[in-house]
Amino acid sequence: MAIIIKKAAKIDDRVKTVNPVYGCSLNPPCPYCYMQSMNRRFHITPEFSVPTEMPQALKKFNTRIPTNFFFTSASDMADYTPEYRDIVFDTMLKYHRNSYLFLTKRPKKCNFDCTLANIWAGVTITSSGDKSRLQDIKSRCRANHYWVCFEPVLGDI
Image (cartoon, rainbow, N blue to C red; front, side, top):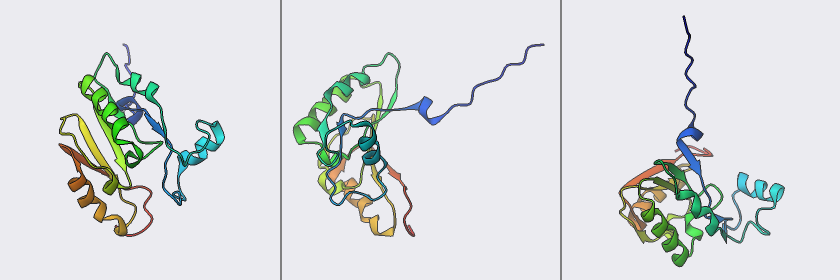
């Protein structure tokens, strides 16, 4: 008698992280920012507070099977220049079989209109003081799908 053990699915089996921009201009920086610490440790960019475009990262969108990509773990969509954002969105359109999730803490600076079915515009909420971001992302970032990330929770929501 054979026993078959299935490997449990993990979130990283379902979502791949890609960073077309590395760095965040938020000043002062978030005191809980783990990517700023990672940059100090691994020296990915000379200065984390100066967002740096990483166009070579867009090559990872070229997959043979549909893939979910989260692409703002080391940046904020608010720091993408309009020209570079257009390049990123054109690349997502080219590889339309994938799904793309991004996150921002500053939706008022993320003006765009992208109604591709595979784009998920996300906003970070850390406390009740951030609730206005929910309306801001819907009015500034036109998308078919929205999502909310509650982390880190720094107060009542």
